[in-house]
Length: 253
Length: 208
Image (cartoon, rainbow over all chains, first blue to last red; front, side):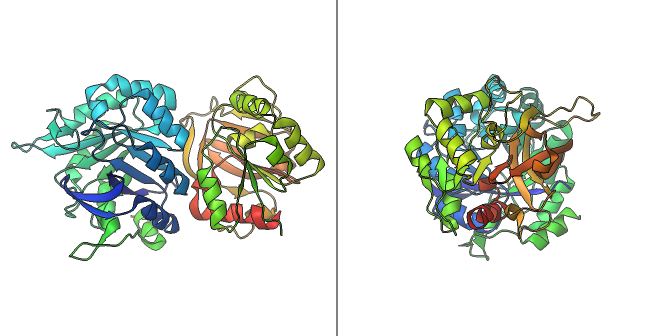
């Protein structure tokens, strides 16, 4: 049985862990290494870390912090943010990162995706696609941490980067990010219907029923932030993860 | 109970997560970055990611081969190879031309899916389960359906079936861990397999 992957999506800013709402207002929620230790104890199968300001600040990935994360992480993890050269990617792999997530760089230059896939293999290359609805309600791919629209349709973009050798898509809805109003099921359905590579859905999860809905819509894996780091209506910081029983019930749906 | 473990550092892996998992088990790992340190070891871990020839070259350049041979083959010090480290204990690999350490009567071969209709992707990357084929302290107390994290394109093929410790299915069954007396190898990464990897390393620490 292939288990559905449920993946904490953790955002980094200035070496700290933050959580955004609609890609804005990053709230500091703690120390990333501490979070890794908690997720180790909760037997999480995979983690994703994204540095949300590296690209806009034209900074390379924070290699020292990533090395610490890799050393503490008793599970495979994916890193994204600020990656724009082959050298960045080879450094990340040598530190013990299992997958890299490409976002702005992939939208600017699909050849870069091809180049990295040739070096590392498609299975290690995730393209992260941030999507927002425009004034006309159309889905558009947004880059540079949600600040610049490419004017492109995510379905077309997903096909292009699949062709270029991406092994997986992290599909994030900016409209739903941090809102805990459920995944954008329509978006997941459209993109997953257009490509054969797995889709990791993100943006809006409230809990296990939402995961089931995203999977039903075609996601191969579900990622979430708020639901794993906040608790209660006042959004108190508490790191959590579904129990094995809940995960099994999800696999049986 | 012998709790000191030396991790061979020949520049082929980030040793951080292995070292940290051992610390979690109450073991202070020794990083063996030169042969003299390896020579004092009472228990060894040979980690590794990357290409077979590159790994053998590094072991030779840094002068590890003779001391490791003496430790493992004469002193019978328990050794656990991980991923590339497990492949290096075989005689050869289809990935390269250099001979391996040859501690195990086995070779390393590429996944051959040529006879399958649906061919899985190479490398095999992700979580997968193992079936234990023979009794070994390495898998004692391991829950049913234990799963481990794999990333590899080549796997060990044993000439003596008695050396096969576990089997995993990816397109077809392959040998996912091996044991001959004090010599152990795991194709997967226990250090990236949280609870299951921790139990496996605990067994290696406490039962060998």
